Image (tube, rainbow, N blue to C red; front, side, top):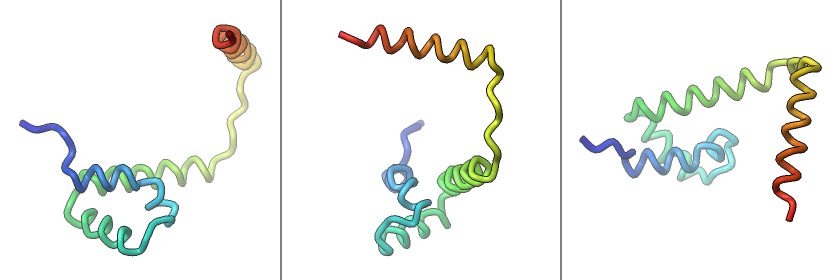
Length: 85
């Protein structure tokens, strides 16, 4: 059983961000849309990604509890110190 994505699926995945942002050539957009009509797996990925973006863009930021904010700040400070030469 071959579990690697098909070449056209790879192209859809590599162009997904530009496709959703409508920042690709019209011919490539048409090619991707034709593929999406035939490939349920890619349709699911595109639809799920669109829904995730919509939910994120239409939601209010959740406040971070003070103790979590403090732990995050300390973890970032440790990471920064470990990365410095």
